[in-house]
Length: 116
Length: 112
Image 1: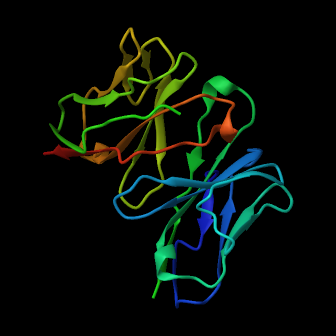
Image 2: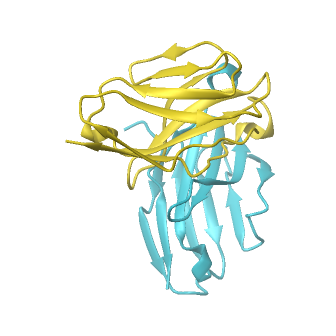
């Protein structure tokens, strides 16, 4: 499978615990995006990387959230001191650079987080 | 990015064409119209996009009005597997990292 891979698919945690999600983008896609989706809503942008550089962060990304893409390949999203309001689906997407006429993002299946 | 308006839900009979409308009256000249869909428990999937001209691919057709203030996504022969939330997005490529701004979309239900 050469699509975007996200792990784990589901995560249940207790309030106050830290969690980390992983995203493996499509090979050679240098742009990687994180989105969050709550029930009944469309996905909301959190942050994006071009290679290893984090170029933009949404105001939704509080200081409890941190994302990394250390070698410009896979990325991790960590949430510290989780709160019940963090319960959501966390989606990762990737796209290739260039070709502005073809801004197609490929999404993974997401990680569903439940904070008890 | 321009704001879009879509009906919250639509129904379609299996085998018939599904026509999903989207209003984007504030679209500017360099903004593209993109359509994605999200089947339950999966990530969004790209369908089609266009700037001015109508577009067709193996999944769907995109009809953009001449003034570009609205568009219609057409699934020519809907199947049960096309049941999903369909998102219409307008954006300028090359800005803001090309993030996608999703609205609430249209829940399309294809009935047998």
